[in-house]
Image (cartoon, rainbow, N blue to C red; front, side):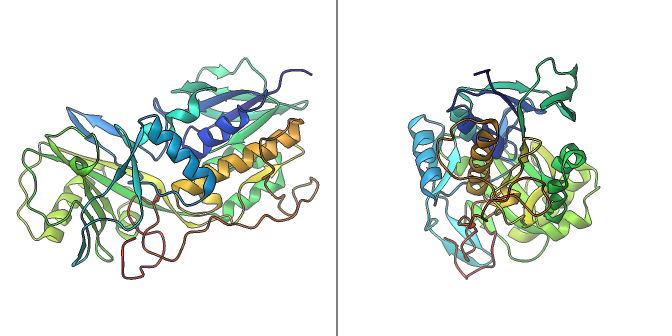
Length: 378
């Protein structure tokens, strides 16, 4: 049998999970990532001696496959439990009820075990896809990639995936159903610790949604004393096109007001805009695949705004594409075909990964809640 080659676009949790599952077979897997590092919104920024986890803030594990993976990550030394003192508005808790995990030494480290057996092209943007006689060709920064692929997995935010995949199947029109909220993330480094009652804070109204002390996370260097502050979805939408310096200053002032403190001038003050931060309306399927073109898309936006959902979506797409190219999948979980996809119909898979109704989902919305508050942090 001829060697099967599969390309994965995007090296966030969904893309790396998909790639790792594909690599468990005889397929040759290549991952293309526009950033220099891996992890997507599991992001760590290092600037002038300070470190900030400015994307997803923590991870919880509820499904058996993801729990097993987190055990692997912990044994590999790239994950550890985080037990910060918490506040939500005026309420305070000594620690989370659920186990919260963070990457070590930064959040982006959580995906490292997934990349052991795949070829990764970092710093390489994929601008266009071409389907030619049953194969896929990629147009990247360096021009047309020399290798053709038998299948393609696109693991980037739904609006960006639509741009790449829409010309090749009506199935991908469903990507327009996904709705995201943006998030401005501010990063501050102070000389001294702040006199605050909690190491992780959440607000249910106002311009801020979340703040966390970097020094409270395991195996983080200090000083300087770094804080990450996330704006609410409403504030971020209203100020989406703000200059990053102006966003950082506005969130610094909002942080001081929320704490009712006169904050010292930070050594470092930065901001990053996550245009596709939080899934507000998910696709409602584990992933999206078109059998005829041997292409599919995956991400947290398929299931729910949780890191675990991205992991499960990537695995589901891997299994579906392996079936399409004639390889035996490690497990039998596959994506259903949406109406009008042109391929054979499959039974709809029940989505068992939806967030529980608490205010505690780990998330790509990089703060505590991804569901209505139940009055507690768990």
